[in-house]
Image: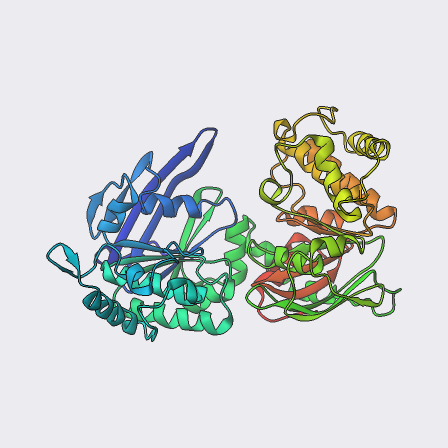
Length: 516
């Protein structure tokens, strides 16, 4: 139930009716947020819900079109981040925004160095930095380079800097995504200490267990709109997810047994194409087991940040596992690079086609040729006739428009760029194709064509891993579904009449691991 009676005198920040529009889209539409002194407040929502935009409005990165921001009861308008910082609002990001080439003391005291006349008293500055670090029980040498320390320590240094500027509101934006369990525990200890000292803390995370362990209240956004504010102790995980994805709690209730009943194993089947046993990477994804078979589509489901992409990267050589073993048709292998995986017939189509996929300054033909040429090596050039035949084959099969192999790919639509990326990997004739968000951001026509292609590839014997934020799409295509949460594999279900989007959401919401 939404908490509709916040106490005004506890509010460190009150955002009311915040609306922000960009060309062609309303990013926030009348959103409210109240941060109270001495509380940890979680901001929840799926990708595109408006969380980052709301934070940027609060920190002065974006100017609001309408609505108001009150800090300690005073109506303020932030035109840039320095004004928000002057009002006592400080942010610690997932990617630490400090200067790693400077010392710890220089980062902690930046802009607040101890001076004697026009000169910086570095001894006194380091002494002050140590005092703030000790408040966080952080025993490190202030003279040491920040780059010499782990991400967790760098984040604690960023929090120490917030203490220097007397931050009354601390925003933690995905602070635990690169931390191990011990580092998360230490960060949480510091956060609770600051909370008990009266600091208002906004916590943004995709890890549900961490949200429930740390936060006192939460605000849920969906599609740029305010869904509600809730006391964390009063909101079940199932109801939280239903608010985030827009499905009723009643529709999710009482179906956990169905999800468990659908769990199956494949020990009696033929030799898997790819077998992973205890595959995991510290700080990325917990060890998991998985068998992938020829002619089968296996879907990966989970909320944003659940570990779907991290798992895919371990299976395809994009990241090196710290634990476990991989085998291709029963033969142990080390997939230390994507090229090593490609030479074993394993290809990954990345979710970030702009940064890790297509190369905008190359033509369609050149983009399609990249992986095939890489698999053969520098000195074994792909014959022009062979390449032309492959390019023509996949441009027709995927209906790539315009049908001009010499067109620069940057001039194609997002959907056609995605098709070119698929053509690149299909040209290598992979035995296993891992597709990470292949239909994100493309129109319904291109999406339908890609879904059709995936089913045809599996019918021809290819093994396909299909990762998508759209549960309906995953269930429509997949024979089996791997369910991820908090970077762990928590279930594996065989798709059928008893498996629906509701059963998958229920599995994500429930505590405990159902299968592996």
